[in-house]
Length: 136
Image (cartoon, rainbow, N blue to C red):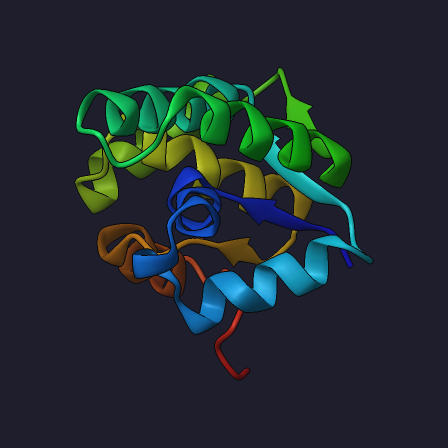
């Protein structure tokens, strides 16, 4: 079954000290299931990596290797969010528009959401969106 992948889970794959069981489960799952993400995911992941280089958490070669590995997982980017729904979710749940975009995609596609963001998890539960790694 497809699922929506957010940048917090993706980032945890890049850093050994940020591993999380839900992220590990999403990584296992992406090998067999389709992962979806709003197009902003592409930018968020790369921003996390470049900021980590600046903070000396990663070297340029590690960023390149991570992005090569990530490309093999085949995350499908969604380019057509429902604007009104993104804004509704952001307003209702006091989310950033960025986080609301992940939730909107999960709702629109009726798929679980892989996230480590506590505010996004809270909003997803309220909207009855299953979180990857949580029991139903």
